[in-house]
Amino acid sequence: MNAMTCRLQREAERIAARHRTPQFYVRFRAPMALARRLYFTHEEVIALREYVTPLLQECLGHGLLHSSRVGLDAATIICVEMEAARVERSRMERLMVLGLMAGLLHDISRGVENHAEAGADVAGRVLKRFSLTDEEILSVVGAIRNHEAFTVPTPSPKPAFQLLSDSLYDGDKFRWGRDTFTHTLWYMMSHQDLTPRELIEKFPWGMSGIVRILDTFRSTTGKHFGPEIIENGVAIGREIYRYLLQNF
Image (cartoon, rainbow, N blue to C red; front, side):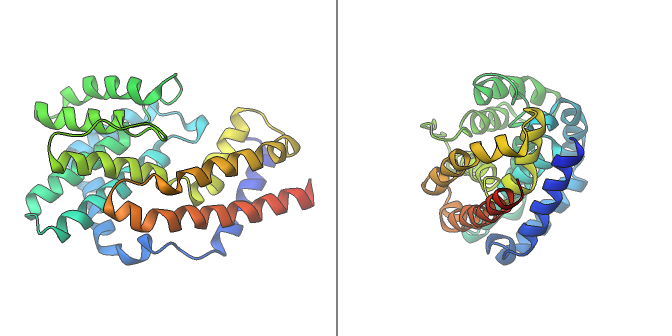
């Protein structure tokens, strides 16, 4: 990333810091803390993280930071919904671990065509290294296959695995909020070697695509809190666009 892009990213981060934190990240601090504990202490999550880190497409803004945040939010959604359903702790934590693993793997083929399908195939092979049942592997693979936007997902055979699939999708689409404008955008700009003027030309089209995601959330929690996350990102994006227009 060149000096200009780094400077623009820092300015975007300053702009984002002035905006409110979406309620999902305020209301569910305890489930998030549990998700983070599992992310940093569960042996197989640690081993998978070490395995996938060099394989992720950081140059596209879909490296470890993106994949970790997707997994953490997916695991948080799983926790929220399973606690509400009074599911026993061990079952809940096991599905949260699968959510973290799905997050780490979901963009492992991000740089190829039809990356969700390709990534699902790769994930199926990678997960055989771990102590997952065949059913658990299929559930993670199915969730990864279903995470692409604006497609019809394949239903899962069990409610818990449907929740895994829906939570992975929603955790990924939460990134279309402020993460787009503090992280992903600048890696894409660097990867495509765009000038600020070229970025300005593409900005309205990109913003219109983000707005389209508003009505696509799948889990109960995602449907309730996802639109605010996107609206928060759009407000940040509009301010960044004004900054670019004023300065370039």
